Image (cartoon, rainbow, N blue to C red; front, side, top):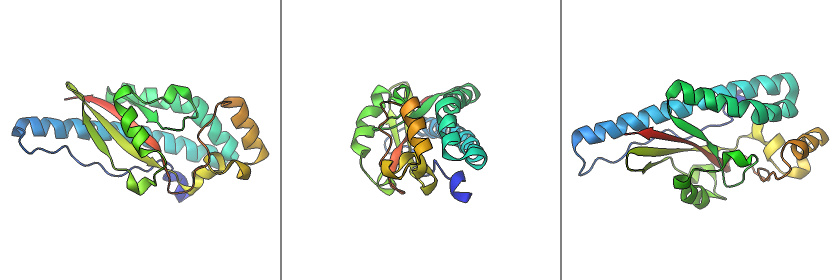
Amino acid sequence: MRTLLALFAFTPAFVLGSEGVPADAALAGQDAVSRADAAASLLQQKLQARLAQAMAAGGPTAALAVCRDDAPRLAEEARRESGLRLGRTSDRLRNPANAPPEWARPHVSSSAGKRAEEVRPLEVDLGDRIGVLRPIAVKAACLPCHGAPGSFSPEVRQALAKAYPMDRAKGYSAGDWRGFIWVEVSK
């Protein structure tokens, strides 16, 4: 059950460099990154709790329903609670609505195929705001729906085919990089 609580673990944040930046600007950047990390954590915690609940009650097919039905609603709740724009994305999407924002695309592409420990958190200067990317690692508990397709139960195969006919979010191993939680925050 502990692994279920770590379904979407991301590496702790690092702060924007402040070399050559006025002290108050560096502090404002640190505050923005802290707000972004809080919002990413909020989304992560809400989704993990709901997935753990669904896995315990109904197994992988129930968890798939959470990702399909509840994850967008939970992201919207986190947006409202934090006042920030945020979501989840990957290079191998299951849901096309999770396509990366334009600024994140090069970072998503350059992380493709890597192990999670190779992908670092990132902050991107977007002018009036900061884009924050926090990596998501594949955990063992993710594999019944994101692992090798040949290992999927018939119920999972059927649920995936029905909910995500263009699914690309499979074939992962534990420890692979799965994607990012992304956040945009004003400076």
